[in-house]
Image 1 (cartoon, rainbow, N blue to C red):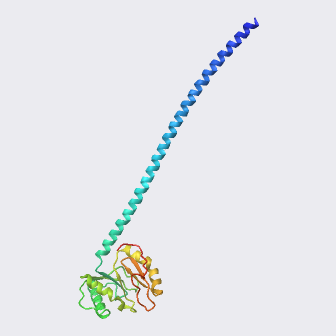
Image 2 (cartoon, one colour; image 1 turned 90 degrees about the vertical axis):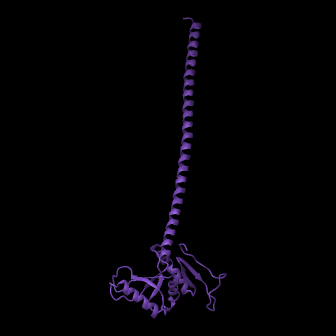
Image 3 (cartoon, rainbow, N blue to C red; image 1 turned 180 degrees about the horizontal axis):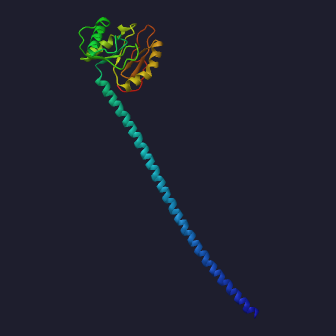
Length: 232
């Protein structure tokens, strides 16, 4: 075969091969570009989805926090209302109990005698009185006394200091939640009194005031106040 003809045939085959390869490469590039486009679209979609998820999580977190705060406020209001309904009551602990079957009539007589003999208070209107809880040992149960008038109840609490040294104690009649708040602050109250400060509760808030060296209580510009939990 003529060498020039063979050369021509080889060049023709080479051009055809190159053309075929260019077509294949172009098709592959087109496929790659399509895949890259799909990946890009998927990435954007995932970013939006993740953003939506994050926003939803944040919204749920805020709503949960708000719900907890509202529940706490509601519980405090309920506790305060229950305490308010008991504002004519006094809890009396340490009063001797003859047996575990004391009737409310006997409890009324016991409280009346206490008011007259220990506190020197006459003419108070006692609505009712009864022991609370079960008696498991020789320790007397607490008496809850309810007065007909709030002023009578306040008169009793103002004279509570007369019971010092008798092992009889008077306290507010509060709901269990409020009692727990006060109980948690008792170490602070005892410590303050041991330091010579004036310490007392106003509902569930612990108030602590300093004294002058003369024993007088410092005025409102000088006393410090440490508040506990609860509402007033």
